[in-house]
Image 1 (cartoon, rainbow, N blue to C red):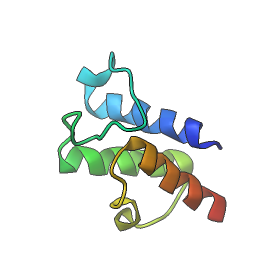
Image 2 (cartoon, one colour):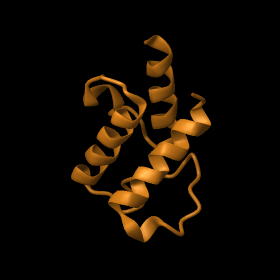
Image 3 (cartoon, rainbow, N blue to C red):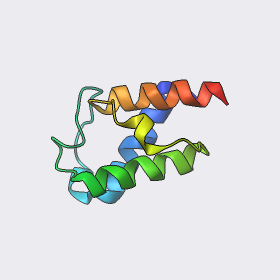
Image 4 (cartoon, rainbow, N blue to C red):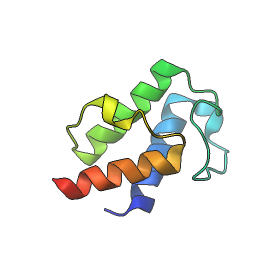
Length: 82
């Protein structure tokens, strides 16, 4: 799976958790927090994405991501490790 495909999965889950984002044109530098996702929303989006990717990593490993592009990059790297 490519980083772009992971980015698309993250944005799809973001729209599921926050329906108001359905018409948003997501960019890699978008921050889930800036888009209105609270900490519970963000955790849910990450957990849903991990499940979609069949990745079993601690959520703490995703904390360093400052935006959706960085999150996709972290998850891409983790997916290459398994």
